[in-house]
Image (cartoon, rainbow, N blue to C red):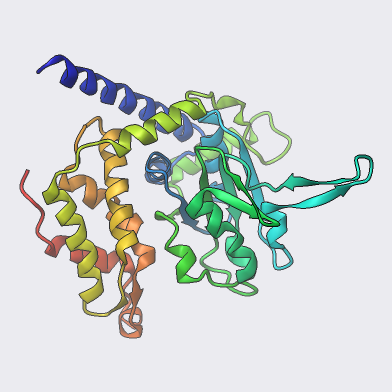
Length: 328
């Protein structure tokens, strides 16, 4: 191994250690949700956004608040409601009487970590206010464009049970989310630990986030994202990713499969997974690990499959087993 290769290997080892520190720090307070914590960290390193689905009270807000604190970054929260307007998200111009001029009042989207709580409670016009921010990392207000600071991650939540008064997200918007993450009930031991932590010396029902220590800075998070983007991807791995995504379009019972953005997101997420594992290259297992979270919201199943009790995860399990992986 020459000096340059050794330097790269050492850099990857340091990056992996930093990513695991971030993951472990968040997992200290988000108890019993190790898979969810790992997936949100992968989304962050890959430079993507996450749609988190689960019933209320499972720690979705706590997750993104803890992640923002551990990453040393700014956090904002928007509670989506039917009367929320796009300007409530992006901001607007207002007139200052003292100075007799218009000034911009930036909205909560100007942060590093944005929690869009119950995003499906707002109408499509308001939901679409996030599209430019998520895709272009910029916001246009009254014809003026303002860049968003990096890193920028949107974590949107929705309740899968309560559908009254909600507006389903259009496919154009769900496709902008790199991951769709399911958050479920914790185990009995984890729930006992959560209950003890929240109620110990506490009047309210919130967990003290002072226990979360900033282990990274925003600049270090950006460095991790750039490191992941530079990982080696063999042509066979790239071809494997494309075969998986193209198979979703022809799978029996799938009305609409993933588009090219699915291939791009899957490859980016696999690189982030490889970095988290301390490797400077992507292997097929990296692709398989992240494929369900990347593709489950990009599949539209037929009514027959729904009646038979199939979910996108069932289809993806069969699909991944049928698509031949390259030998490494």
